Image 1: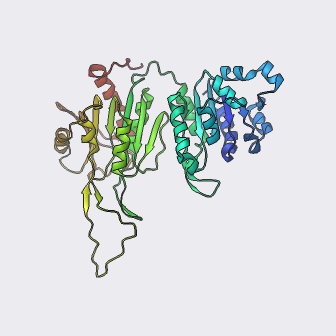
Image 2: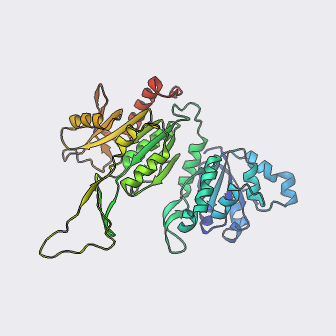
Image 3: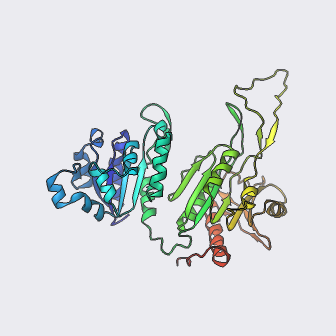
Length: 411
C-alpha cells in the first residue's frame, strides 16, 4: 500500500470507530488517506478526529461550495487508487445498489472509476435479510469487491455474521485488489475449493464430524487467488479467516456443501479438500437424546451422504476441466488413492497420509502423494502452504497444456 491513495467512505454505524484505526494502519503502511463521512457517520465519529488522523480535511457536504469548486466529488473519486467503504451499512449498500446519489458519499461512489471495496457491518438479521442479499448480489455483478463481514458478538448484544472486518484484513484485501494481475497465470479463471469438515446433526447439541481444520483448503484458496483466479471457497465450520480475494460461502452439512458447490459452477478448476462426513443420521431429533440407562447406547440409523467429488467429476453440463480430490488415508495410501481416482472420475487425487505415524491430521504440515491416471508423485513432508503452492503450479501447467488458454506464469 506504500504510495497508494485511499478514499475512505465512513458509513453511519457503530463500527465507524474502527475506521479511525483503519486510517492509522493505512498510513503506517505508507498510504495517503482522504475521508468522506456520511451524515449518519458523524453521529459516531467526528470530522475533527478523522481529519487529524488523515492529516487531510474530512469531507462531509455535497453542497459545500468551496469544496465543490476546489476538490469536488468527481475529483475525489478520480484521485484515489481505491475507494474503501468502512463500515458499509445496509442503508448505504442499498443506496449504492440502486444508483442513488443524494449525498457526497453516494455521489462519489456513482462517479467512481476506481476499484471499490466494501466492508459491510450490520446486525446479523439485517445481513441475512433477502433485501440486503439482493443488493449484495447486484453490487457484486457491478464489480464491487467485499471483505467480511465476520461472525461474532455485536454491539446490540447479539451474535452472528455482521461484524465489520478488522482494519488489517481490509487493507490486505485492498492490497490484493491493487496488485498487477496482468501477469498472473490464472487471471480470468474461476477456481472452486471446498474445505473443512461438515457437521451432521445427531440432536440439537451433538453432531458427527472429524478432525479437519480446513487449513489445507484455505491455503489452496489463497494460492489460487495469488495467481489471479477468482476463487469461491465453500467451507464447513472452521476457525480460519477467508484469504484475501476469495468469496467465502459457509455451510454446515454435506447436503448444504453440495448445493453451494453446484451453485458456484461453472469453474475452470475444482479442488475438493473438504473432509465431508460419509453419513448423516436419518430423521431429525429435535430434542437432546437422553441416556437409556443400564449402559445401553441409543440406536442411530445412518444414511449415506451425497458424494460431492463424484457428483461434480461426472457432472454432464458443467464439469470443470480439472477436478482434484483429496484422500485422507491411514494405510495403503497410494493404492487406496488410485482406487478412489477410478471410482470418483476425477483427474487427480492428492493422497494425504494421516496415520498415527505422521501425526498430522489437523496440523500445519501434510505428507502427500499426487496421483494421476499415469503417474504418482511422492512429495516430501511440507507445510500446507507449500503443498497449496505446489499443487496450484501443477494446475497452471495442466491448464496451459490442455485446459482453457492462460497467460504465461509471472517471472
